[in-house]
Amino acid sequence: MQADKVIQSYVIHNYGNLVTPSEAKFDQQSKTWVAELKADYPRIIRDDLKPKERILKFLALRQLGEVRLTEDLRVSEATTRDECINKVDTLLTRWRQVAEEIIVSASASQLAKIGMVKDTLNPIVMIISNFLRKSKETITFDEIETEPRRHRMMQYFNFLAHIKLLEPTSKGFQYSPLFAQMRQSSPNSEEFKNAVVGYILKNYYTTIKGVFAISRFEPFVHMDSCYYIPALQAEEMLAKKEDSLIDQYSDWYGGASQMRLRSILDELVRVEVLKRENDFYYGQDTVWNDMLSLKDRLPAELMPLRV
Image 1 (cartoon, rainbow, N blue to C red):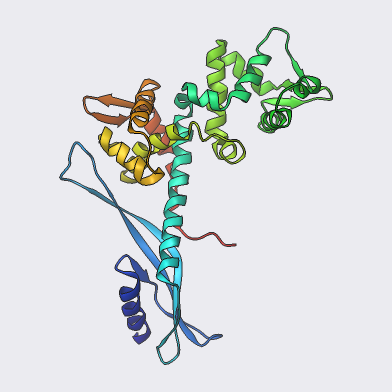
Image 2 (cartoon, rainbow, N blue to C red):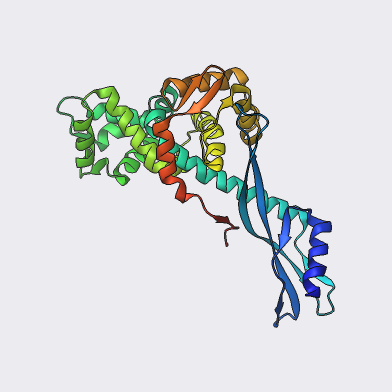
């Protein structure tokens, strides 16, 4: 079809080789030929143990824009190159965020053992610790009112009630049957705190990321993702050198102290999110298997959200 040839030529000259048009369709209302812009975006993944080999995977990006032709096949309207690039970047970021949520869910129990994670969620840990005292069944509103940041503290109590770990009463908050059940499974106090923090990370990471300031422990999640996102894309565990992971971190999340990132890698190894053999980092089997069970959450196609 002549309209397809005209649009194809326009797309190659204005958007490059990655973006392609769909088959042109004639819109009777506007009397124009219209084609959607899309891309099968290539992702090149490398295993540092096999530096000469590469794994090529594609992400299907759709509805990046459109090109319209008049009836006499002249371009009348087209998404700009910058708009198209912005949509590609937005969709790639969204895919990475979904992958990150899967990674946090699968490694939540291990991440909960990191001191910085518990420090960041200290109000929750503090509430849990108070309920672990003998005969402490209720924290009253009067007690919460004495807190220096009582409004913020009330947010944490309401959040814990919302996720069914606490129950509101006329006097304050009491622990729930779920809290008691988890306590029975983890009689050691420190293990119980880890279990609660892990439960929250596993099931409510997006919520606490949006509501509470958790930026202090996000570098642990991001470094975790720098290993496992490429592995999820490749659909196999990879061997990665320290420098490769640090470079990936800088590319996705911006520059950071290399000393800090190395210490984060050490922590991830200590809590068994990753393992290190000689100069290479690998995934942990239990964490990896949990990720594979959640992999179906990753969208097969990505398209802009409708407003």
